[in-house]
Length: 299
Image (cartoon, rainbow, N blue to C red; front, top):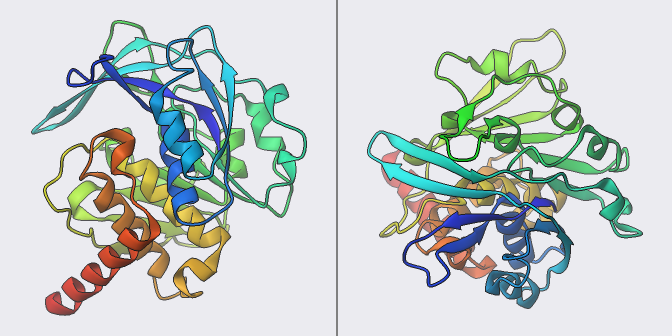
């Protein structure tokens, strides 16, 4: 896992913020699913000793902190019409030279920029046969401290073109951007997962010159949601975990159990504040059973 940890403003936390960012949620999720996990996490000085980093280490994550003079700080305002995100601070780049020796041999990667802190050079580090997932949202933001975060039109990017799996929320791009336009920025044959909250989402894949193959997956219901932050990151991490280690779902990728795993994990993270909502494997399995029972009822 590679990315900068954000500090997300939280007025109910004594510090005034919680540690977040796709790298944090992804690392904790894959570790709790039982995958050996290393996380290269950029942090500013205030976040370097965050208690949430102990959560990751206690889950077995090999955490390597990269000091940044400036780390991303966001204020996420939840509204009936959707999230409004304010930028308090941008992020310094995370240098490729910070990658520990031997980590480039990993067979699975999640590149999780939250504030465009990963340069194009990160695309060339995974070995050719590694599975690479990318959280696209961190490359689709225009960040000006003190202003509302604005969308950047999706375009081909070396990190996105390297990915086998790309995830984003439908809210990360303008409504007039089509799935075909999104997919055109990816490498043919890769998988695009577009989450749509409690409406589930759509996954798309396609060979060069062929029509997109689209599948809808249903959401798995949350019990008493508390905090939606990190749901997309957890979804992508669980989906990537199933692709990297198919035994997590008994090899039933073709039957959609990877999507069920991801949707179940995402439903659970909503039930706790910040990283405290990231579930363990047993909780995800129970929620998967609930999701299957609900699907049979709908049928």
